[in-house]
Image (cartoon, rainbow, N blue to C red; front, side, top):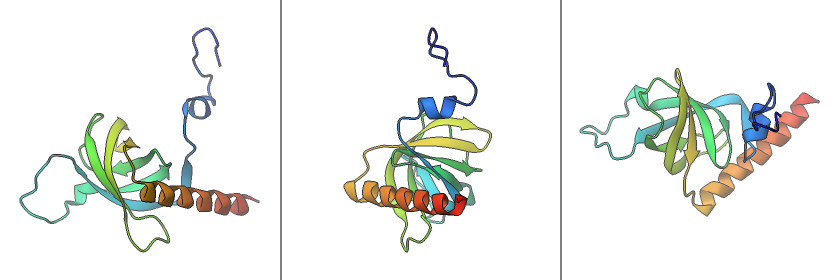
Length: 134
């Protein structure tokens, strides 16, 4: 890291700038979402509101979708975590960045139950990946 400018050197950017550990999932899992404040005339899910989660932490996720969303948009997310019978609902998240069809979202105000569920998923995934890597 360049200490004068606090700029990470190549290969350090992700590890130095992340405040919360994340898990890159071995098999991406589906999610659905909607932009907060938009009212729909029909209850059907628009295929554009579906996505795939590639990594997740207790504070956010990286998702890929064909939906038109932008940094600053506030969304609700429903994550279908692997090996969980029901979806995990994130009531509020903010889109922080986007590149092509991939977006970083930050979760806000998680309930203790959702936070615990995400932490357990991350712990299980980390152990599984460590065993798989050896």
